[in-house]
Amino acid sequence: MDTLIDLFANTQAALYESVMQPIAFALGMGSRLEDVFNGTGWLLVGLLQIAVMVAVIGPLQRWRPVEALADHKAIRTDVIYTVIHRLGLFRVMLFLSVDPVLDTLMGELRVQGMGTFHLEDLWPGVTDGPFISFVIYLVVFDFVNYWLHRAQHQWNWWWALHALHHSQRQMTQWSDNRNHLLDDLLGAVIWVLIAQLIGIAPTQFVAVVAITQLFENFQHANLRVSFGQWGERLWVSPRFHRLHHAVGFGHETAQGAKVVLGGHNFGVLLPWWDVMFGTGNFDLRFEPTGIRDQVEQGVDYGEGFWSQQRLGIKRLMCALGFSSTR
Image 1 (cartoon, helix red, strand yellow):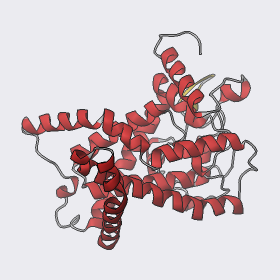
Image 2 (cartoon, one colour):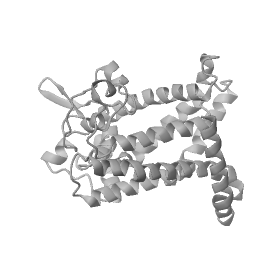
Image 3 (spheres, one colour):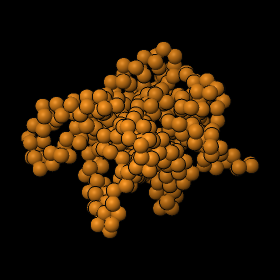
Image 4 (tube, one colour):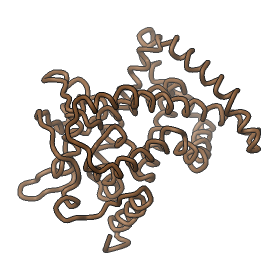
């Protein structure tokens, strides 16, 4: 772990000094060099993730696909979402809009006597190594992700935004970032707040985010793969997550004769939470993906990036009672 951290830090420093710092000075951002350095780390993570997607997950999809891909325009739109998120554009938006507010909030909490808390300090001696503490934080954030995911599916206003993610009829490794920007913003703010509250080190936070995102790319892949009876209960597979995207199943729950928001297979990395809270389905099947009203009623969720974002806002306004139509 220390070796990997050192390698990443050295590469980040080299990229910053040779490329990002000169650009920052050219743009008049000499007073924000620390932020530019941190942004360089996220850019490097994104480049590494995309490299793994192209070099590893892409060939796996071609080796054993679930379905033949026909709607290449929709997939190209998903690539745009991935570029926005993985190459730092979304981080810039967070930096300009949210980070100053969160910094002020956390500063005020410390002024009020709430010092820095570190979760791994609860087990002194056990969590001294960076690998053990990293695993603990990974599990904690995955538990948070499970409940965030359930909230996205059970609160009408949040589902109005999150539905965009489920509207992809042909899932690929690029589909993970197909989200409404407001949906992503909410999740990012919650993650940053929790990171501050539990005291995770910045390098470990970057690693947790990077590992989580890369495995999410794998889970969304057009890949006919199951981990078997026991493996499916240890780590989320493409089959397990594809069932979460299944039409009329992953985002709906039957209550007698009534169907309500809910669904199955909310785990992001670990299916443990679905087992623990009764939301898991481990049927070994690969279903068509999409949303029931999209398939059965022709509801439009948009084709291009801007239309998808616009329609997401319209759905949100409808869910909040400000509009009666889409």
